[in-house]
View 1 (spheres, rainbow, N blue to C red):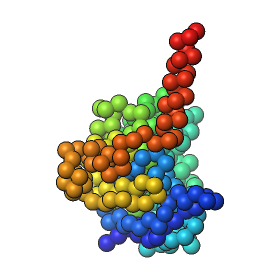
View 2 (cartoon, rainbow, N blue to C red):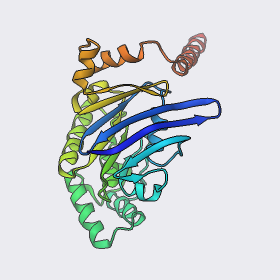
View 3 (cartoon, one colour):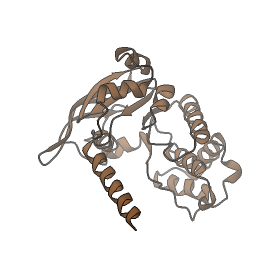
Length: 264
């Protein structure tokens, strides 16, 4: 049974087609990795799934709700952890959770139950009254995940959830996410540039490039099809190893900056 069903999804910005006739489905209860190079259409697709962008055409069903026609109802079905930090660092962990509960209209009794349960599950309960500005990067990420699950969503979107974290913290983060997937019965839809994470954690993977889904399957099946040892090798075999124009431009600026610094 699919918790997310996307059919013929397209997004155009003037003459640019960022997402081109994309179709895929995510099964209820699975951990699904959505991968792609920078500029491939990954972020645009996620923004449409989470009601932040309106598609040019196509359909999105989430938990049997038409996301395009009923965005408010759809938002009740998912939680999201953005790549950029979104916590109020001048509040405590508990206050951040309480504020989010008010936004979602949770009763005081239900909010307390959910906050206590999630903070305990993510091993943050002993620090619930501490200001977030004193938290480590990993603790902040865990709090954002707890907050995203507060209203008991069916789907949790994670955009680069372990970006900038050290390997030990990244490993623990995925342990928490897998436990949440089991205990909360939540479907996990995540993006990452750490291919070993997707290889280790995802039940299935979809790779998007140039606005189109170019391959779907389990990490094992993608490696087998491309005769690759690792998912990163499979990813490069499918998307190419050439540096993209936007990344090449950034590298040129960095090289020029380094040359100017050496001349000083």
